[in-house]
Structures are given as structure tokens and as C-alpha cells.
Length: 112
Length: 112
Image (cartoon, rainbow over all chains, first blue to last red; front, side, top):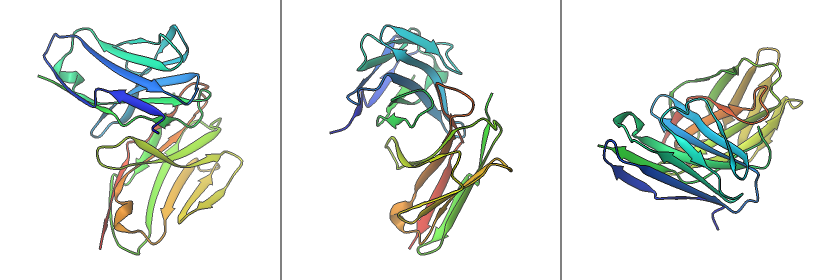
């Protein structure tokens, strides 16, 4: 059974609309992460969290919010989606910070 | 912050040949190093993790070398087969206690 799941797996959104990407993990990990992947850029960290009800900014947080309502769930929120946010988004979890991370299958977001 | 350079961006080898990917990093305090594999449409799958006190690690046709003096990490796939075709990422923990820094990836194509 997959330990990190994401929903939806793909989404088409309109510019200016609100988008919520969800992530659920059954690893019992404290740390969760949201990355975006763009061709030529590898993975870039958007937000992360090390405890429920708390989130931290990563390297590219502008235009994104995050929510960690429980240890198992971590959401990424785009309040006003823009064309530049078209990308593949990955969620990951780890036992401790800097430790090996386990990834979900990704969400392909297209903003039109 | 930590920077990871990965090369080559693209690599094509014949079945049975070796494939060699190299990463250089900047933070000498880096404790953990990782290699991930990403197949088309999928998330990142952890291939191997290496702690900084290890110079060489071999597992199932994969050899990872760590040269701390030159701050260089490499992955060698011996006897590659078409199923190895994927994007490979190196990552390290840098001096951070919360995140990994990823290289931009290497697209490996193994032709029969």
C-alpha cells in the first residue's frame, strides 16, 4: 500500500482560481514537504512542516500557502492560481529533517 | 545555501554498458547523500542513501562513490538495461536539519 498519496493526480485550473492539492501519508513521519518540479529546475521546496498545525516556508513560497491539520495530512493551497504555477507538484515525508524522503506520485497542475 | 550541480543532463547508453552520473556539492557539513530514480509519470523512488563517513557503497548493480575532499558524489550503473531508463536525481542534506537539496536530474536512456 502506497505510503504517500496525493490527490488529485492531475488538475486543470483557471487563472485567478483557487487550487488545493492534498497529501496523505501513513509513514507516521513528522516531516512533510511540498515541491514543484519544472523541466530544467529539478525539485524546488515550496513549504514544509515538522509538526501538525505548523508550516514553514521553503525556498519558493511566494504564491503558495500550506496547511498541516494533522500528522498525516498536508495541503498546498494556491489562492490565486497563475500561469507560472503550471508544474508537477510532489509531496514527501521523512522521519526527521534532512533524512531520506518518501515521495508521492505527484500532481500535474495546468493553469490556463 | 547548499548548491548541488549534477551532470550530465542527458545520458544515452547501450544495454549492458555502464552509466555514470556525477554530482558536486558545496556544503562540507553535509551528512547524508541520496540517489533517487524517477520513472515517467511517477514520483521519486529512493535508490540508495549514503552517510558522509562512507566512501563507497554497492547495491544491486549500483555503485555510489563519495569523495569528500572534492565534494563529489557519483552513481555508476553497471550493465544497464532498458528498465533503467529514467531520470536520476542526487540529493543531500547540506548543513540543514530540515531539507534536502536536489540536483537537476539526469535523463538516462538505455537502448537495446
